[in-house]
Image (cartoon, rainbow, N blue to C red; front, side):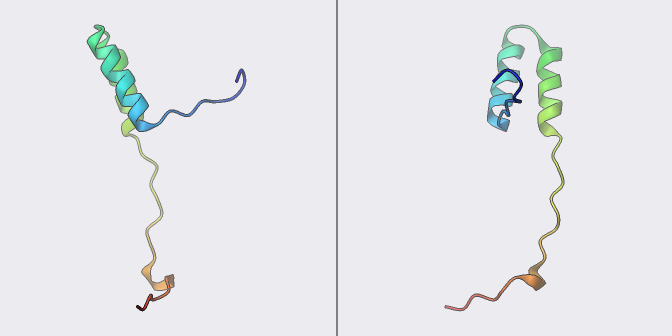
Length: 55
């Protein structure tokens, strides 16, 4: 795993931020939370192209 990027889930980042905050490192915790809160925008769902399901 030397050159591979390891992806952390939102939960993992949140737990890391809590750990840093408890250890007296609030700036590091805030940095982690800021990176976590930035979400990529998803394209809008297009209901017109979806098939109608009938039961």
